[in-house]
Image (tube, rainbow, N blue to C red; front, side):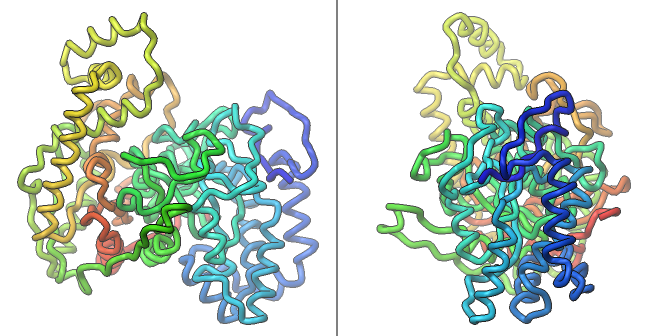
Length: 533
């Protein structure tokens, strides 16, 4: 049947009918989950008083605990469901629950008793971004038009996580059609950041990042077109990995519309994992990566090893600021401290853009592709005004948008050539360097702001007001060139908000930025739970 859906409390004025297996949040908390955790499974829950030790563990640590018999899959699943009951009301991170989660956990325990191991994440609970279809669970991608969409088939990432042994608990919130750096929509409402509920967790994988930070899940598959894995990881203090282009299949992601049976050809969007440790990112990527469907007949994928075995092995370039998206001092200080820690650990560091990288030109190419992808058909009566805006060439985002949506085929071919040149420049750079460090965003998590359109919003920073769309700058370089990029938590601002560094690596060598992210935790600290959870 349909999943448990959060509907009424996101829109208190609206009350709809509740069908079998489809409860409002109030009914779910009062009945469904309470029944599971306090009645049917009370004996096993009471038998393991130490289950709370795993609340913020890595997914791999949780899997080891199940394998060793420290805890059962049912116990762990009901423990996380109880935490959702306790904490999700103030976050609104998880918006639909899978009806078969406890039954699936029970089956995992029965399989363990037979020593039938399903995979590296046997019995570990996870959540799925609401942009990915999950069989039997309402999947809306934040759109009212899909409020009743219950898929009959898993997206590729959901199917692969199931095959690796994970217990899918439910879905996490996104902006409408996964388009935005805040996670709110007309179906489920607004998701809050567990570090400060007056601030956004980011988007579009904001619900997943918030759930991970708050200990409500162990792993989350996200998608990234405009930083939708990396920015939420930065805002919430977790790890996020944008894989190399086309490594992880996008089949079953919305958009495009439901029902497309194959992964669509991709130019910018990718799917990848978010987690509380770099080791989880690598293990998840090995599960998620590789061809899907008919493509699997022709080629195979394996993850090349990381280039370094210790921090001193790594040749690292970095840039921490740029006038196009000036980094706030509180973020910049945390990133500078990270560079200092790397230097002390013996890493080989070089400041400055790679030879041949024109940051403005690469960003312009990326932004043109991004806007062209997001824009719908332009009406004939709109063309004149848009062309006039584009001709102004004033450097504003509005003019850039107008230029992108009215661009000729010849201009778009020029943009594509710039993308190919960018790939070549970065490829040459990574022959002599192993990684390139950048900010993930110019600010830490900012207060909720749903007013107006993104192109007209502003960010208040200590360096003055900045255009909201500056958030697209620092994540653009890896996306344009199809490179892997890992965001890793490296500290907190003086105000107590997380900061994440972005580590860009060589194409198809995703293990290198992930490995560097993990080794960074030894010198600057890794994930830490937010207060109150």
